[in-house]
Image (cartoon, rainbow, N blue to C red; front, side):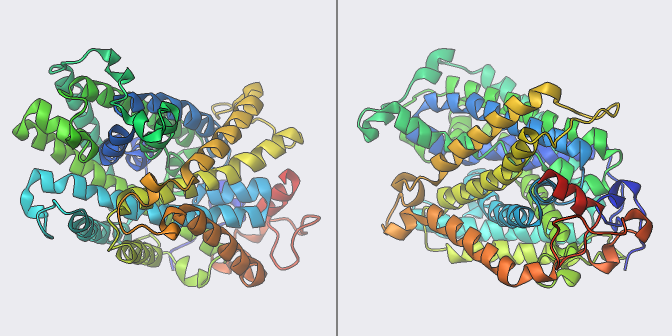
Length: 529
């Protein structure tokens, strides 16, 4: 067992820090921006946006940014006050109580595992175009062969991220920071390269490429579907706060990292998409709906230069999956030390040698691989799995922003007045309201049972088209039922992770559950809920 670290910042939560504070400001920023990973997201689903919305789908990029900025601002205020492992789980617990916290943590954990699988699949759209030898299954022309090959590549990547995360946070941080540096340099270089070969005016982003024809002449309908491509990129910024227990001065660094990661991703991704569409020689080229920006690179910059930039995208995908895996481990660890998951004591154990929770790293990697194998015969695995990940993320975010809004309306959320801490002040309420409205609208749009998203290719089955509703419903209802009837009676901070007695109060909060041990954090949650 690792030696206890009596961290005053965690005492109010009822915890002793078992993790080592070793991450600086850039490490924290790198964690947030690598999870968003603008190169990974824009390239992985650009084919989807261009194929279903044409170049005009670009407008979904600034729209999604504004919506997610509202959420990020709310999260930055929370991160300034509570930079703690499993950020969304602990924030929801603070604001809405134990039950809401558990559901938020559960949904975020599932979302992270699904995101690992979905993001790792991006290798298929990149590696075979760098070298055909990466197409192990068939020649890539068959949709099923491409999907199976994508799963093979994804499994190799997940094995790598599992080993790195199990070895320790310092190795992860070094690889991640190096990868982020390469990604940022590649993104800027790509913007410059595309700007030098533009053939279309900026007005190309008003070109729909006739995609409205598939929706009875309504481009709005086509746009709502194509916009999923942008929705996939800009999330995961809360990772900066989830590494708070391993960061130096997280109360100040985490909020900055959250906002900087989102803004940087918006600017870089928006310019890549803009100049990429301006460099498209034929906006109606069928290859755009198959390969997206990967085709643009080869077509506009030539095969050799295109491959060089694809190498940068390969690095971006790698560190993105590494960051998502890291965030998932922190969520599982945070819930496990509250004994909120089966086998909590084992999952919460921090290796004295590697100073990281090793079992969660392995367990999450195995689950991500199983999810891929379950979908091995589905050609539409890319968009379907990706959409499921986004929906779960938006729901878990709502389980933070809605309780936060309730606390504001009840006058129980007071902006911090500590110097250097991030605070929205009087703007907090309107921003919070808009963040909730945005989250609800996007959740409905993402979960809508559209055939082109969830069952675009044969075999056609009703349960595939409704897979988002079914999966999310079963995950939420089934998971919470297990928690309510089984796990909630066992919830309470594990003795090995509990703060010293002097950090806790002598009595439980009024209205707290009888089957748990009330800590300082629990009493604050009761006052906010």
